[in-house]
Amino acid sequence: MSDPVRQIRLVIVGATGMVGGLALRYALDNPAVASVTVIGRRTLGISHPKLKEVLHRDFGNCSALSEALSGQDAAIFCLGAYTGVVSDSNLRKITVDYTIEFARVLHGSSPDAAFSFLSGMGADQTERSRAAFARYKGMAENALLKTGFPRVFIFRPAYIYPVEPRKEPNFGYRLQRWIYPVFRVLFPGFVIQSDHLAQAMVDVVLREAGERGGVVLENRDIKAMAEKF
Image (cartoon, rainbow, N blue to C red):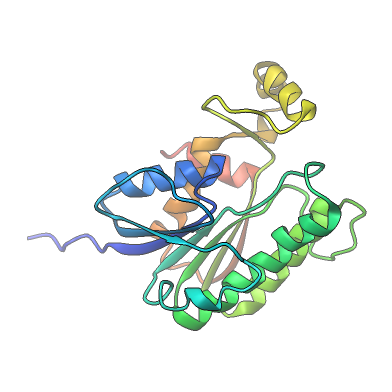
């Protein structure tokens, strides 16, 4: 008689976004996931036996989430903002401060949880890059690696291709979507499908139980994972 499959309790932040939403859908359908707690500012408008929603509007102070985050096995953190869409101060607040504050409370409530973090290609852990996105993502990565989680998986995708229609935040993203078919052929190492990225962020906390410490997954690593799906 085979041993029963171990199920995990998962928390997702950023489930209303492109990657977080796909991660949620994949997790709810995955038999290895026992429950999914979504932390967000607004309701998702869906129901599922595995799903629990917790509304939280101020990610600058996550202390009120300590009970909801207790007993979690892993977190998928996809909260973020588009460069050029918000001010520099808000970009830093969302990218760095919100990540650090959430991780602080999660670690206090579930110190053995795995943490899967959506960063980005070019993230600079020296924190000296002239590009705000790279500098702030590097700051967030450094903070997560010092938090004390036994497993931290840092995902650094390049261009994330939306597999489902969406309203692009600006002209640059619209242009990237238009030229994607050509870009994918000419530069396959610099693109990743949104659904493949989302699935990898969930799968890594389900399957890489033996991996300890911080693991940085560049776009090529994410694509290699996707090829195994």
